[in-house]
Amino acid sequence: MVTPEEILRIEQDIVYTLKNIYDPEIPVNIYDLGLVYEIDVEPGGEANIRMTLTAPNCPMADALLQQVNDDVLKVKGVTSVNVVLTFDPPWSREMISEAALLELGML
Image (cartoon, rainbow, N blue to C red; front, side, top):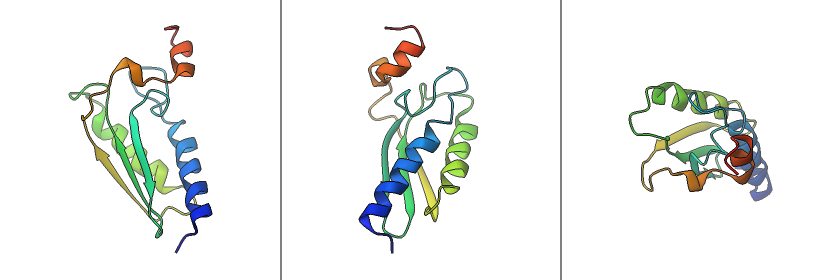
């Protein structure tokens, strides 16, 4: 059983991990790109990640989801990973962080 403080640390470590995974078509990490909708860590260490893609027909979808699963599973305290792909709400430019917009020259 993991304490609430440990859950918070695990969630922060997951965010750090996701910020090191880049969309194959856009030179921005998936977290700042707004592809990650929710991160929830259960007391047993199970990490649930709800995310989307920039387009439903993304040819790299399987590889990207597998990378998220594999990398998050390496986070200390994570016992399993459940990545849920959703398109509700659909991804849009408004979901991109200000830092990523600046990096992309869109500000």
